[in-house]
Each structure stands twice: as C-alpha cells, then as structure tokens.
Image (spheres, rainbow, N blue to C red):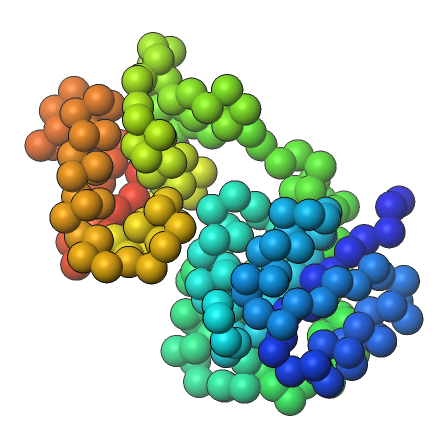
Length: 232
C-alpha cells in the first residue's frame, strides 16, 4: 500500500511539529499548514488522505476550511479545538468533520482516531471509489462532463447555476445556509448574499422543476437554507 499522507493544520507551530513527530513514527507522510488558506493550497498541489484541522486559526478558520473542502472532497477531517462545549463539537461535525478531539489531548488518542478514519477511508472503499457521478430521483450530475441531466435530458445551466446544483446534489439531504452556498460557490465572504442566491435558486428551479412553486428536488428549509432531496 502507498504511504498515506496526513495534513496537519494548526496556527501553533509547536502543536504542528509535535503531531508530526508521532505521525512520522507511525510511517505517515506529513504536510503542515498554519491556517485554512495554506491547507487548501496544499490540497490542490498534493494528494492528502486525512486532515487534522484546528478550528480557531487566523486568515481562514477550520469551519470555513471544512466548508470549502467538503464542496469537492470526501477525505476524513479530524477537528481540533480548545473548546469542550457540546455546541462546538456539534458545529464541527455538522459542517462535515468526521471526528473531533479537544485540546489538550494525548497523542496516542489522536493516533488511534487517525488510524480509525484512514481505515474507513482507504480499506472500506471510500478512497478508491470517489464518485464523479451523483443522482437523486432522476436528477443526475456528471462531474467530469460538467453536465446535469433530468430524467436523461440535458439541463442547460449557467456556470453559477451548475456550481450551486453540484454543491447541493453532491451533498444531497444536507441543508446549506444561504451564506454557506454563497461562500462555497462564489469563493468570497458573503455580503448581501440572500437576494443573489435566491435569484439563482429560482432560475435553477425553473429549469429542473415541473412546478417551481412546488419543487420536487430543490427544497427550502425555512429559516435555515436549501437542500436537494436524497434519493428515495
């Protein structure tokens, strides 16, 4: 088996270096980043099999980085935080983290969680079977072809409409807030995003829904955001 690579992202150099020592002793390759921006850049340049990601960091925190990672990748994410409250744990897991560990932690506990997540990812098929096609109830997306089809018929979407549909269909069943959709699709901080996102959602519905006012696919969850229904 190839040597697996773990990306350690924390603004504390001592923590990064300490985790690196234990991971390398276990035979892993290690990449290091000081914030979410550095982590995303490394993900574009190198293959990574697991990310250890601190929540509180400058430039881009762990929550924002997880949003962006989950829009395109399903690699395991273990979040680190000095906060022990349940709300922080729930927040981290709800945005797409696979596990959560509170500082200070015992290095052997972190290693055990790393091994568990990598086993699921590599040995149980998630890593080798990353899909480029997604479908829910007749609405299908082909990532390689950059196409969306409805019951086999090509749907003509603008680039932004495609990106929104891709985000929601790849994560079918998950509710995204307007702010999350804007930041993940437009790749910038949300500012007066509600009307912009709403207009694009309306246009997508006009193209994929038989009755846009009573949508079959693209549903609003009042007070929270939007989702595409999971396959029945």
